[in-house]
Length: 385
Image 1: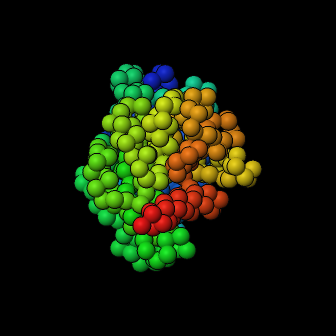
Image 2: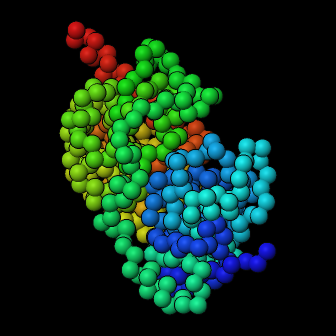
């Protein structure tokens, strides 16, 4: 079969030549980043936090175990395009039902292969994440470079509206997966905790983990007010991951400020950043972000090291934490803040993904800690009656 020529054009003027796969009749436009995971490409493709980005995989061979219907993090491919050294033409896995190439075609997403991904990743590490375009219009690379320069910068960009739910809904693990059962834990005493989840691009595996720890989750759109969320009288609030610049989601920051005084709160990734902003800390854009399943994080409370999965382009500035917040986790690659908690309120957050199981369960205790906080609040209310 004849290959379709394609290019990856970057805003710095560099053009990589290769071959297109997936939906080659469209272009992919976005911020080009790289992911260091050797597996999990399906989870990466469907992670809403990658909205607005083209993902380069550092592992040279992608697609060899195909795509299945269970391991998705959302209902669609969220990335704008993918860059690989080689896309496997065949796949072998008893759970797989479709090839990576076919999966991209199904959702109208383009990929490019046959380029030197090592050179591209080194460029992104040296110069930082940059805007780019994957295109099969190979005759006019200079025009593609100019179009790449015109793509909106991730700085100041609110993308939550592109990935949040249209309306609130209840999520049940039993409805999603037959093998998942809602847990009767010691903390909940057999009575599920009601959790309100603010959806800025929530991953399905987060919902699965909450269910396994005995939570019934109601997912709310990103723009839902604090008043509406509190109407359901939840036991706790979860603030989800998502794409874009946290500082641009000003309406969410205000909502969170009205929630943290009322209920136990747990934030992951973008939720961590929004919590920091809600308490007065500042966020900033990382040079090339953290994207992979092999990031070492030190728990400052226990001294233990966790192998973590991370996917974010912004971070909370640890030097701007207000007095009521304290750092709980530090990324050992660059000493950026990876977790924090409130000194008096039951509020915790981490910059990484404990539900992604890279350790595989190094960080799963965070869900138990969140549940423990809700259990403590439940006991307080009971003792007052």
